[in-house]
Image 1 (cartoon, rainbow over the protein chains, first blue to last red):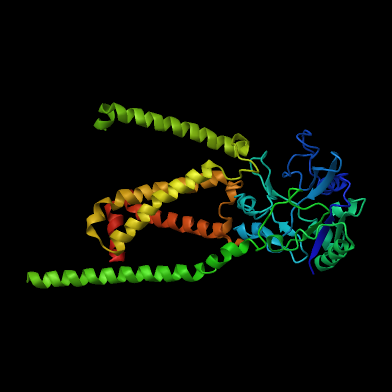
Image 2 (image 1 turned 120 degrees about the horizontal axis):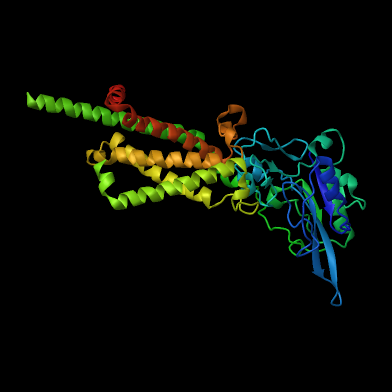
Length: 261
Length: 163
């Protein structure tokens, strides 16, 4: 059983209740921002804004334009690149579904920030001993049988929380009813994520990153799995080389002694 | 000491390098007290030139020491023996630079030892391998360099064990 979020972009009205609910639940401070160049605010996710609504202006009919609102947060990959990159296991995929962060382990190397294909982990740049911060899908609420704060706050039902399999079924049902692009973003992206999106506008137009369908940790796993065997083999080979050189030198010395006498 | 007094270019270079050290020490102090605000690092560029220069130059310097140690100590190519000690020193300094640089680079410098602690191990990470390589080779280089610090007796003690 792994929980997930289904975000229906067609249902989102851009009220930012989810963004506020997230800040309130985690006591995250507000940030001084400006409304430029778009209505998106704050302009990026940060260590203090784990989720935000991106306002996308699209060409509408008759020279008009239309809004679409994209709620952003951690995608909670099934096989997360951040967790595989983290060398102290501070990030890990929980059995409930969220990708959780354990600040007590974090060294602050920022490798997760480089590894994540969605650019989700952020650092508290204003501190001298900063931590990584990101959406943890309200893992402690989920464990208590509650919905994540954002899903509870959504007034239009654009954020649905439930079992990933159930949500995929629901997404397919809505797509079959019509009015949606035939693509569930997150079903296969990055090997599958625990946040799923459906939309009436193609995802490329909404600025969703085009990511590999192969789980990212697979790229390094093949070579890393060999290391426990390669290192001892190499060490044994070098020791053998040293023993050989040592023996050869001794024999040589003996021979020279013998020749001298 | 005489050469120090007489050679003007040498004194000029040393002064310039000392100035770099003073600026660097102040920057290091700022990083530890104020934080990364004093750098141009951001969520878009979590790793700066700093990391690249540090790792690429320091590790590259040490790779020479590693290769030459193999050539001289394992393959016993006598021809290269005279340059082994300066090469080990260069490698040692390179690695010290990497280790020091990384301690200032990580956000939690006091936790530099976390990847050593078995309960925190995460061997699926490429950085885990890098960490262990740097950690172990720093120890190796320290041992290789130690005769220069402790003198001839120490070196002979070592060579007795080796031989």
